[in-house]
Length: 312
Image 1 (cartoon, rainbow, N blue to C red):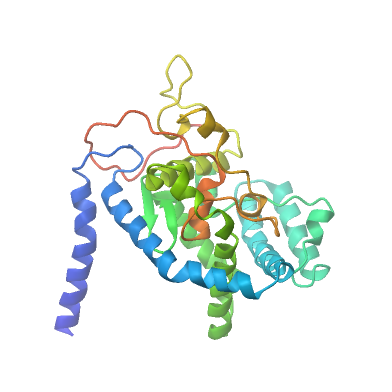
Image 2 (cartoon, rainbow, N blue to C red):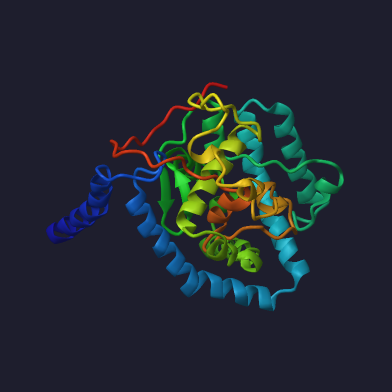
């Protein structure tokens, strides 16, 4: 027992030490004080995808016809509507929460358990909300950018949001463990399969895929929190130029190399994800909005894991 305790302590120290050392390093973005650690995790995620997740997704796509995959996407999208309704309610968006609830009821019944998206055809719009956005809605800043093993880009705030959303995931409450794990695995492989057509875009569209993914993720999350209309930064200059993630690299970057995807942006089923992600749907989310360049590199600074949100 003593040796086991010492082993776990050593493991914890080995994981925390790079985070502490990263605080004294300069970073290319004030939003990413843990960049050395994040880059290492990014390389790990990419290796896992290349060796395991992508081959599984390719086999899945080769075996199942498109209409079957569409039905599976619809099924998981219907489950996600439950979480979306709850988060809209927590944000005080009662009308949207009612619409989301209606989507679940209609698609679960008339849509045969969610296999068919009948609600969208009836005019009930698909929304995109999660607990990370809910925290942002109530003024919680995103904090430091984080790259999470197996899951992809996130932030201090969004990591907490993912944890809460996972606790509210209806799939997690299945008592049959084999069925529950199978559904989790199927959802991951299905979403990764939807990225196969565009999985090489990230590698060919950016000199630094990590930076490209990070900036796109931060910009997209800011747009989602403010429902597509983020306020101007307080420290914008007189010319209206925005620092950090709100300032595009170039006119072409502002337009974005990726078309908007209804599937991940709004979770409407049957539409391929448009992304250059190379691991998970979480990382694919970052590329739905064209990433913006970071301003001039900031000088060495103390790590700050939390930043306030601008007033609404």
